[in-house]
Length: 153
Image 1 (cartoon, rainbow, N blue to C red):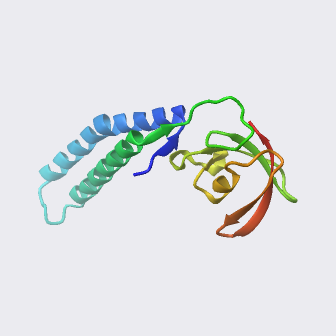
Image 2: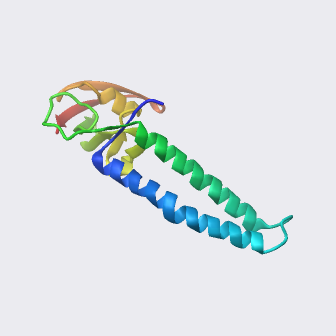
Image 3: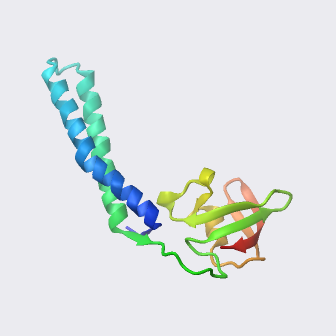
């Protein structure tokens, strides 16, 4: 599996989620399974089925987080650079639109509503390795558009 980019904050948040799932959530699900088994009728026990599904989800998420964290590449706080890279704060503007600010992060931390875009997204890919003042074409599923990089922080 290729490495994923994470900020220190993102790494710690995902590690906390993993710790919670391994300890607290696993115990809760085990108790739920035990209670469902004690309720009797195994043939049509909806609670048992729901508990098994939750257990499967929890174990799958644990495995996903273990792999993600073991392959993580931490984004270091660096001095300001003139090229967009993972970890850069970028201000861009599409013609006729208001300027927008984004931080380029790894896919695991992306949340466009919070101004955090993935380096793997069409916009993130297009911005990488460009400088302030560059006009960049973005190939997006909804069509191509052009933006200008106003600043990099």
